[in-house]
Image (cartoon, rainbow, N blue to C red):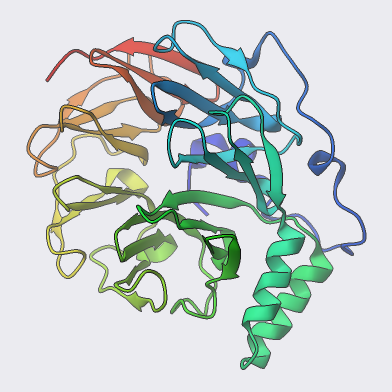
Length: 345
């Protein structure tokens, strides 16, 4: 497993946890995150916007938020001490976080307070319910139940219709439509249960990327998935869908691939930074940013056809990036957060 490899245990250290009976929830799922004055200097792995608010999340259930473009921060109330790996917001109020132990949390006040909605034990039950006609998948789901909620979710995506997609280690894949949760693992051409690192959605199209060059696509809102011909056999750690419909897949050793036809064909994008890429975003002015794990930034003004490098000085282990305002970004990483000027493009 290579996603955010520089972060080691901070991001994925629980993947190799031994099997155990799922009799009770681990204490980290029932104990609230501890308040700390060092929250902004702690390991942070995810960043997102909730309207005008910035929200960052990371280890031990830490969530911080800012209402002034990242100058001042407050710590949120979180009911669990798990590492959080991704954030997604429907609007300024309603949002989601996912992380270790198969955790899914929801907020309805812009990230100030969170509640635990799902854990790995419940996800395994969803997998068991979905595998009605496949005894091999049913047996795998039974093993997950016996092992307990020890596998992380790694990414989230929200569709315009409000559907929430969540993917993670060992082929974990789920969707929430309305108030109903379903496992997607029986719909994915991923029998090897490869790790799924990224998911993005746009209308009825849903894209998933993972290890060993895995690229999956649904054209009907997640009802069916197909495997795409992959241009690369290394791991893809992230996906970026632009407002023009361009899809970028990026990951190991700085590889960036661009598709203008929803994944039917791919073109390699030159990247002068041979460092794994961990995050990407489209700014409000339309420009694109990709974040390397050493803190370098790649900036594109032509919808991902080419990128220029902005070197990190000094190098900063980085996991996620969010736009603070027209001239600033906020980076999240193992050493906490940094607000940096970027300038208008």
